[in-house]
Image (cartoon, rainbow, N blue to C red; front, side):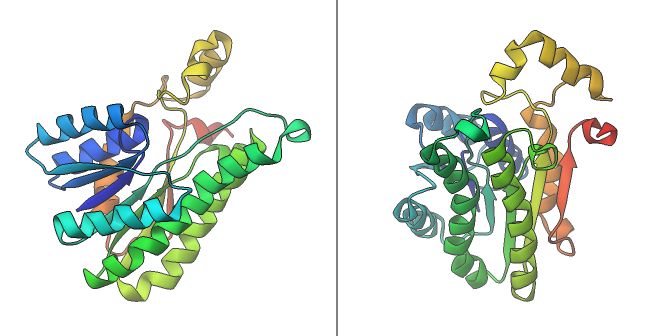
Length: 242
């Protein structure tokens, strides 16, 4: 049983679909109900159970309701994927406080609060898997608030892995490079920047959400029971040239 935040689009949908194909039932916790409905239909077509819960990850009541509903509907929780995230493009010297808060509260605080809310259920299940979604921007520091929030996710992953290893809860992070999603569509539409990314990527292309399937299934399965606190880069080799 897996909760995937932001699991109705982009990387989150790709991960939700891959876990469903591997045999997991899915709860999609996301804001856009129309997109969630489409994702539910796709997952159910794979023969898995799936429900959608409207959830704003900056709202702890929504987080708690998502976990409570999951336990009520499915009887337990084994996997949490913290994928929900937002970005922004303001320069640091002109960035408004509310924009900083929106990005950091969503990407970092929301991840922490979801982990915190899920902990009792994972403990009751005898252990489980948490997969946090970072970003290569945490290393390149391209945008101040986004880089800071995703860098925080990497450090949070290590801290939770250390604290919860005794509870048989493995906490790891996936660090995507440049992927083709709604969030990166402005970059893809910028032809010169898009070409520069593709030229620099040894694989010669942007990633597709399905490219995360293998690592997501590994980190959600018993095959990774001795892997915790790791941040695994999936970028087609882009970071090799950094």
